[in-house]
Length: 476
Image 1 (tube, helix red, strand yellow):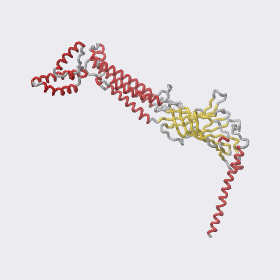
Image 2 (cartoon, one colour; image 1 turned 180 degrees about the vertical axis):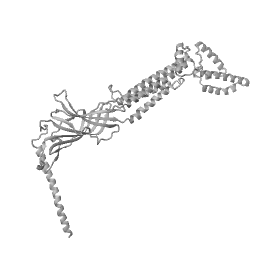
Image 3 (cartoon, helix red, strand yellow; image 1 turned 45 degrees about the horizontal axis):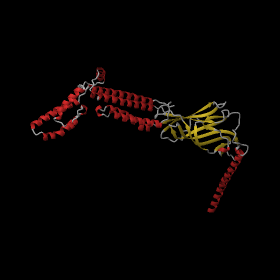
Image 4 (cartoon, helix red, strand yellow; image 1 turned 180 degrees about the horizontal axis):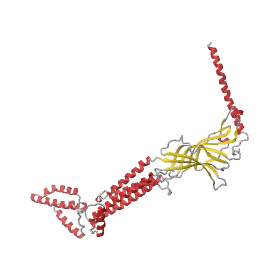
């Protein structure tokens, strides 16, 4: 009995399989017949369909797939987009009952008429031109992906916290709005398949219909313009550019804290000046050479550069006044009154014990007397007569170095003790004189504090203004 069941099952499945094969063959036959009937007759792909007196409506939809590249220097952007066009061709209609119920058919794009829709901002296009889909009602769907390289004007005033807006305009190149009328499928573009970019965030992609009359023609053209708004991710630039520059600005203040006697004030500010110049070169290499939208961060860097140059000048003035007493010139009364006394009170500088500035004749006499006394206890090659060169550590080193030589050379105990007392008295007087100020040094100290306060004040104002301007929202 098992063979009877097998035969009955085979008898049921064989008609179904045979019917599917016959149906597939019939579909192929009807598709070939439909293709010949539509495209191998009187149809021509070179002429726009004329189905009525009205303009042919072309609907467009754009989907943004990826931001391939954006060059601020060249002011160009490269996008990968999906373009979807739809229109009606009355010459491509058929009765489904005459062709086995077929309501759709895919045909090569070069076999039918396609509107000459062009990207107006395009520099170069690489498109993958697939086949088109037509329906029995004459509806034509033409969808393809393309990589477009187009111009995009950059507004880098708020770099790196900037928004950029690029315009993507599609319009017929030859047909006016009396022949082709453009429409957008929706008010916004398709962002559902967008690939996340590492530097830019897509804010919006809005569509607008535009009818514009050009100088070349007597009739206006219809177009669809997409406004692509993107926002830069500023984290990279904050870490690598803004924060290091803030640290450099704070470090420049430390140059005023260095004592004038160290002789490193100008060299320190020159190093800061070179570092600021490097940051300006980075801005120049990154951003376009535009005078219309100059970046705020560039203005901030330039002002800081000028302040650094000014700090070098101020340090030079301080050092000149600090060592001006060596010339033996007396300070003018008006300088003493307005700067040393008046500006000193304004800068909260306490009164110092001043030593008079010696004239050149008195200075030579004192130097001769001082050298005569010290030659009796200190070797000539270990003594420096400049007061600004005498430091406590140096004196202690000289004292300890020659004590052993005294004990060997001076055999008499009483003479040795007397010589030691003479040295200690001379050493205290020199040490005390080395820690006093004369009027020129006090003037240099007063101006140095004033320059420090002025530099910090201007730097704070400059930085605060920079942060306030960047915090303002400039989204288009």
